[in-house]
Length: 517
Image 1: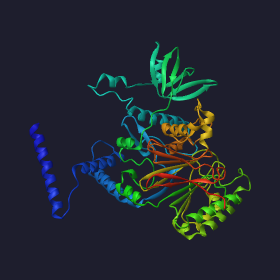
Image 2: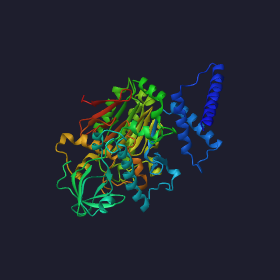
Image 3: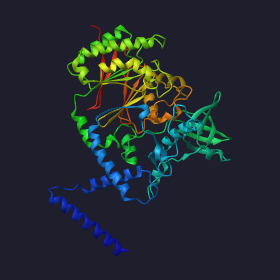
Image 4: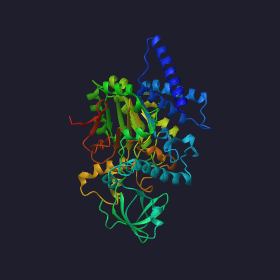
């Protein structure tokens, strides 16, 4: 055995020496060993993405993997700015057997449809749970202690139980931690549900993870809270360069050092974020004019205009009014050639904009293409760098991942929470922590915030993006949590014409306000 290993090592060294000598003859140097291992890891990831029929890897599979890696290195440099609609987000499903996320085409799941099936609804909750479960199991509090570790370390570790484990016990269980979804199966009674079953909750002594004791078919809760959050860097350390975010790149742009460098060098880049751009309001249009005049000397990279685009609720004259208002906005943009030629315009529809429903993901301008062309055709011809996208949507700028959603979520969460924060000043922090802990933009009951069952994955915020823009009518806020910057510009007309300016190079936000002339 030793002789075989020595011969193998000698053969490897001989090949390395021969390859290195060949490169040196051409005046080239190979990368260090650590970077070589990184390349090998990327090739292995590319191999696993392919639909393999057996564990034996053939030459054709390796050639395809190497080509994919080569293309991903080149394409990330070209893809510096991309707007990704919710229906274009790739779907990855966690495989408990493989301990990794696999693309939809490698599973038995069917392609998503707006008219979801009963299985889609069940998968919605199952996938939400599985995502949080695998993330929680990796947290330092729930990983088993290392063999030979001090006894104190073991006492600071916890073990997650399932509802099935509680229901299968006839004796009292103390100090139990269970991960599950709080639900109301009966009026006035809370239950904890996971894929294995449901158990009634007694929250009378709950003060703050579902921790307590189980007795007489009731889980008596001492404390309950959210699953721990996980930074994007930790997630990617486990799952490599998988592109969960979407876009044209086959691998995550977070892995591109070149894009990161270009991003930091572009210090003048800025994103202007405005919510509730009421185009039928003369005062709002005057303020937009004023904004354009102020930025004419140094045009922003992108204007993100979020709905609602009308001050009045949806009515029979709104479509005609919106078309005329967009024409006025196009006139204003064309008055400033520097902005017209340099800046991009992203329009995210609001809950009261024209569209088939208020179900998320929402796209008032794609689900009804004839109507969409009729409303926006002239504007898009006059302002070619404009995109009418979905709600929510994603923006990839160099190596940064930005999520934008226009929904009044803070109010909905306050009305449907189990326990309100003790202070109104804490509401934005609690709101942001809830979103990131749940890994979802709308962690609410479906009757409160309905979603297309088969497209629920498009509302995930996992891995955690760099920036989430919550265009909410609640008071403006800037909060950083788990290496994620969460921004709410507030309602433009209702907050005294305030808006936010985001600088990607140093990841800072500037609070801005248009004063009266």
